[in-house]
Image (cartoon, rainbow, N blue to C red; front, top):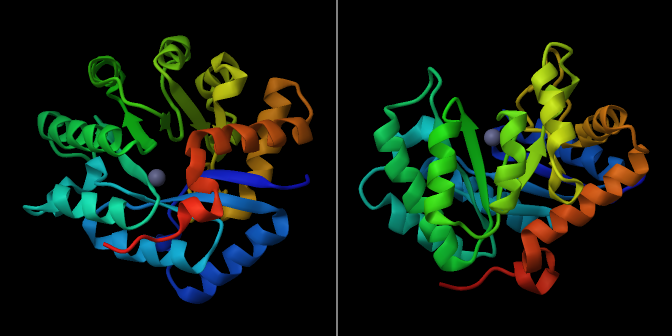
Length: 263
Ligand SMILES: [Zn+2]
């Protein structure tokens, strides 16, 4: 598969050491990955995300407080988030709702989530959303808040909701989980999303399909698997995902748009 390739969601800051990260970035460059969205999850990793983006030209930083880490949002965290977003062209993420076992109560999550959605809207930044087992509330909040540009990362929502979310402006990023033979509903969701809203991601360094832990270079594999499900040539899908990814980030991808600003 020829580049350029776009990895719509990862957490490069979570590599256990510098050598593994360097190797993952080398393989990604070799595979033609030219842009990736590196998502922070709590105030504790925003500095690392900022540094990664400063050191690697294809890395676009995203700063956010993830629903699993709400406890780490000490007083003042939202102002802190805004100041990170103002330091460098960046997205808001990873933020969202999680009704699964890892999360604190949903009411608190909703407050944290909507505050960040509003901040993204105020600053005109794209937002990267996480949603697990909270799709009903997610739909209500999206309707109410009417965010600007946003994506569901590793989309796992009902296939039937895809059209409605797309009409509300959503992009949908699919991960290596589509390779999991047991995830039939996920493949139906992939088929239900309008082509011009499709994105793909690796969630590196995490494994998001059993036994699959490929790093950002693995985006080529995700694209091949998706192309097979969609019945279209992989080259064609990777070009589409690149174009969609660039539309999603807008002028954040232009070299001058990504130049760090002084506070
Ligand atoms: Zn993530």
